[in-house]
Amino acid sequence: MNILREAWGGLECHVVFFLPSQSYGMLIRAADHLADWIPIKCHLLLPTNPFPTPYPGIDLPPLGDRMSSKAALQQLATLQTRLIDEKRKGTPSSILAIRYFLPMLESAIAIKDLSAAKRYREKISEKDIPKRALPNWWGLNSLLYFYMGDPDLVKVHAEKILAWARVNQNTYWEKTAYEFMGISEFKKQRFENAKEFFEKAIETKKDEANKLPLAGTYIFLGQVSAKQGRYQDAIEYYRKALEIQSEYGDRKSQAFTYHQTGLLAQSNRLYEDAESYYLKALEIEDEFEDLHLKPFTSLYLGLVCALRGKRKQSQLHFLTSLGILYKNGDAENMDFCLKCLSILWKKPRGYDMPAQIARIMGITIEEAEKLLLSNLQDLPSHTNNV
Image (cartoon, rainbow, N blue to C red; front, side):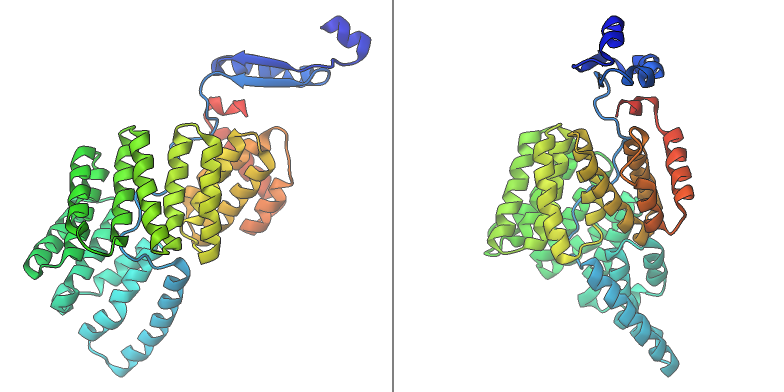
């Protein structure tokens, strides 16, 4: 090859190296020299995914009628303004709890502002909650503890909901209680127990005319199957959920179902299918201005585009995700997104990435470059295979 290089100044071919990741370092030390005269492609046998793991995101779908991020923010702003006036009037705390702090708690949970949610919760005493509203209060507590990562307290409040539902013969709250119990078991990785609770939730509503509430439960079952490695079962559950959502015109909820189906396909390395599902989810998220789910769909879409060799599209989706995560103040997932961007930026340096990150985060281009370099240093060695 050296003789040909000296004679022709280059070679009309590509060299593809197949090698394990631990051998990559030896090659890369000479890669810049080799690249001067021959196009190089490196195919690493293991690991197949260059990006940091585990991926961030959402384990389970929301319960009930999820408030959009936009609606939650609007409700919070309105209630906070009115609350000031009510306090000036000397409105009793028990009334403030029901009229203001309870819906503010719901809004804070919807936008995942857990610090605010905990503050609002402390302003509410259970004795001030009307009996008819107790299941909603317990449900909000279960959701809050779910996001705080406390499955035991999720179950405590779910048991209260179940007891109330049985006394009042309310199948909606009975189903919700079983779902929360399933979530508690799911978070403890007791997947068979979780499946039993979700199947009980299906059983409570199977004979009712309105099948829409079952869609979310099928997604739960799909999540359990995915965790157990039963790909076809999970796909079938997601298909049932999408079928119900389509029948009842619940387009907004379809975004989460497509998102989860994409994640399932991605975990099975079906990257083309995953991209298709994520794009469908993203279309709906844009339609409903869903700033909670969109950054994760964009992030995963960036991952599959990168793994399919679509670097420019990958960067675009990562930057979209970063912008929303930055506005949401989600530092943990911003860190993950920046690590993914740093891998794309590393070689070749490009696509004006530091300038775009600087615009998003309100920093200088030099600071953006330092941020990318610092993330590169934190990456495991196998990420050199991009």
